[in-house]
Length: 83
Image (cartoon, rainbow, N blue to C red):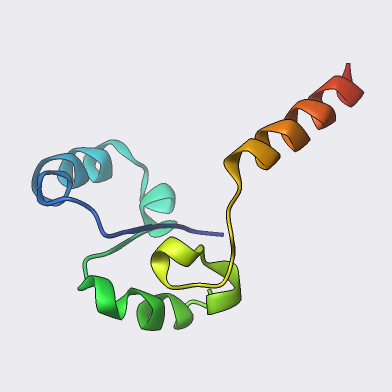
């Protein structure tokens, strides 16, 4: 399982990325993928990792319509069940 970070601002690429990588263990670094590609190539790059259009939000060119309010309501319901 990896964390994929895409379309990062220049300040993140130049300042935060080296600091974060320096603080992580070798195993953690291997599970963190920065995709420093043009925005138009992100979908193609992620597809190489098995992350397809039907898994990406519409904001990134995928087909998943995100609804933050619905997600929060579902999350609250789950947490109330756990109490």
